[in-house]
Image (cartoon, rainbow, N blue to C red; front, side):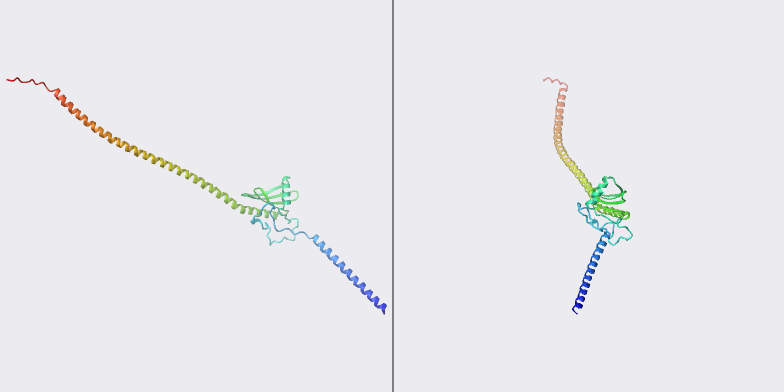
Length: 259
């Protein structure tokens, strides 16, 4: 009886060990399957485009460009063609190196004020670089092998340069109008000063003319009085002369004898 109990107990222990070993094998197999699935799954493309770290972002460009959030990538498109790289230091350095090595062809470029967008193409690996820049300094660089996405992204960047340049162009126009107004003000002020100078000269000359006329009138009156006095004197002298001439020219009358 004791032998039978011991044999049953040993069988039960062996069965439990077998279950534990099976469970451990199942856990290890599940872990390995998960690890393999994670390693084989392709990385999802980033949906946001970050600006270059050295440049402060503009609010109009902080959203994803050229790729709407609601549009999901199709399963037929290859993952490599849809991969886009944010404008990090690596992407910028890579672009600059390839530009210096003359490995890129400039397909399209748009300038709007101080901003611009370019679509560059590397023929050796069929890679597109879409860039956004200001003052000819790289701002954002997107690398992709999808031609349609590159064209759409370039068009979006070009539209954004136009939007951002509107204020700059408006500032340039307003500055030009301000400078023209300042020139007009300076010309009008110069003309006003000239007119004031002319008026002052005219007033001075008019005062001098009036004073000269007053003096001349006084002198004329004095001379006229002197002329009349001289004429009266002349008339008096002529009267006296005629009287004396009459006496001198009178015939001699002899005196009568007294009786």
